[in-house]
Length: 570
Ligand SMILES: Cc1ncc(C[n+]2csc(CCOP(=O)(O)OP(=O)(O)O)c2C)c(N)n1
Ligand SMILES: [Mg+2]
Image (tube, rainbow, N blue to C red; front, side, top):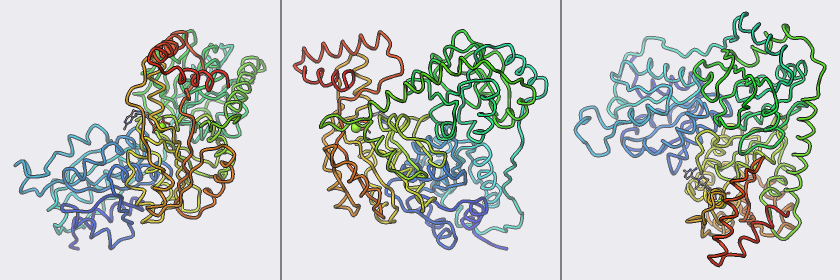
């Protein structure tokens, strides 16, 4: 049967489970988008391709199904790059159809020509060109299979003219997605059981690899009386209904999580590739279990490295373990965890005319649906999400924790809301983050995608301001002169609210959440807010004090007073 390359690509993606394709039409992909328009693959017309990449990534991250982006040659396909990096790092199965100039012009410096494979090779699990029209179904099937099974982005580069070619499509290339059991061999499991039996104080550190292992983690923790600390990305999976949870370690973490790791004599890192070497214990034995052997021992020296899926490995390990009775290490950690939670709750109270962002996040947690889906911009919104939003088991969270980009929140929410039209989808935006990619608010309006945007308006690049102050620098280039975001939203067809006093916040937030379509709530939050790490090092205090001295000398003593009052006396 004779069929065009465009039709073959669309059909292969649909058969692999893709529901939506995000992008902007034009020259080299017009035949492809024309083919899509005759299929069930929905085209979502964004205003900036970076938003399209974040949206596809958000959808793919939450559903673990394929989402697609497509772009024109040169700048059109180049614009996806930051959002594609995000998906590459967080493991979302996205396929990017990147196009290039016609084959007859390639290599001649034709306008808009550029080599997409050189760009995308570094942020993909698969990056290939369709060199001959007959390869279309085979290459796209391989791309989809790589994205789904290696968890990341697959890029297929196509010259504009190739899309139009007619081919005989008579070989049934298709996509395979096996679900193997992965566990260490018996000798390795026995070695692990031996280490567990000889240890006195065991802590579990659970990463994103434990996302399917909630019940197994708890069974293990109960058997060996171990507190469970978790990475920021696994919060949504590990925290709910977990009597062994003690929170997180790291700069965004809390004291209980940090101490549970510091004070153990055996640390079990399960499905975690936590990058910050300084937060691993110095005097403990460390065991790491990961499905990828290349991750073993790359963040800290380890005593035993095992290849396994967390759930499969725990299930095979449990019969080899004896029930432990001594729960003193566990109880110490839990005691500290309850203190940490009280401290967070204290910071989230409002006692003055200022709206603390912690209070705002806590109120959101209390009011949002039990199965709401939240995204947060890189910057301080990400911190407030991790510290103050309750994980219920049904709630889902996504922030840019590995790529660390700004402006991810509402673009990711845009894709997520397409995939889950029945659920509340809430984007926690920085004023810097929102304005970086402001244009696609129009897409929310045009497509009537009911994302709820919460803007933390602190009139600054607050996270960086905090970094600069902690380093003892005077804050430079961090101020933002903002519009009234609520009015701006109204102008372009979103429902908008602005709140600047704590009293009006609860009712307004309720009205915003209850609104049926896309809606924006702008809240003027306190600017002088430090993201306090779990343990304040002497050198941080010293350099923050240095900021104080510099600020006073520069006639900014009011700011020093605010900083101290809002962060240390509250
Ligand atoms: C694309 C990008 N540019 C710059 C940075 C560096 N950066 C990290 S957080 C941040 C400030 C974020 O400001 P805003 O969105 O207003 O959030 P806030 O921290 O003020 O709540 C900046 C500039 C980054 N991570 N990503
Ligand atoms: Mg800000």
